[in-house]
Amino acid sequence: MKSPLYPIKFTPILKDKIWGGEKLKNILNKPSTVKNVGESWEISDVEGDTSMVANGSLEGQSLKHLLSTYKGDLIGEQNYAQFGNTFPLLIKFIDAKEDLSIQLHPNDALAAKRHNSFGKTEMWYVMQADQDANLIVGFNQPMNSEIYLKHLENKTLPEILNFDTVKTGDAYFIDVGRVHAIGAGVLLAEIQQTSDITYRVYDWDRVDDKGNERELHIDLALEAFDFNMPENFRVSYSKVENKANAMVTCPYFTVNYLKLSENLIKTNAKDSFIIYMCVAGQVTVKVNGFSTALQTGETVLLPAALTNFELVTDNATLLEVYV
Image (cartoon, rainbow, N blue to C red):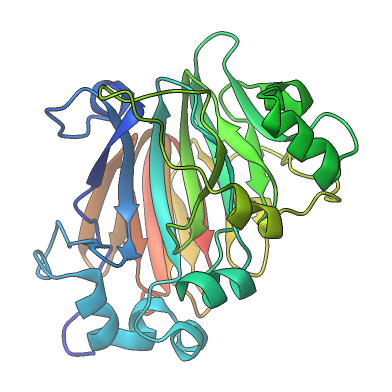
């Protein structure tokens, strides 16, 4: 290594969205001066939105620069062999003040062919939800393209969608090809492949201040749909304190739930970076004499070369993410 690596925090990239609100600013303390902040990109290697280091001796350097400099020491040797100088995950917090559009994402093959991009498999963890707030995931009946297109044409698509009322701690795995939307009043953490490819199929007939509707992607989406997906999108997981509880394991990422009521010494033997998203409480990550504090709504990247570290807290809930 050319210089010691340590637990790295990045400057959040805040996204102004027509459906965004003020929870990212008021609950997660994101530094925003605009009202409609919909997303905080915590760790991003999306072109045009590369994260910049916010702490320590590497402050001001880009994630892309770290990848090209530290390679496998940063993300793991196998990950570097597979992904090269592209960070494989996009990590976000999302605040939906209004309903998001009904949408879905393409798989790797389709995204590569059309957009020279990864697909967009993702997962959600609900951090806070207003009373009766919901998520839309999948359909409420057996589906095919004919039924779907008929409802789309008649502007009755919501009639065939599955609405789930949600609360803090609910988690969902959103595979490519599955229709979905975040409902108004939901604040969540999102883990996804590095991709910004979204196909909107319905946007509640909304218009902007000039009377224009947002672009839809009806034809692109039709080829990306999988109408025969099982209803396996709700994530059930245990919540045993002071140990990693498995939530999601897929080819693109692994996510564990970690509720801490005492300090925990951890060993990373995975040949991967580890990301911690602090979804409640506060924690300090200590390694090699370096301490990094996390509050609710903050994220840290532990390079793969850091194989032993300590999580110091008496009250924190973390999502532990690696590839």
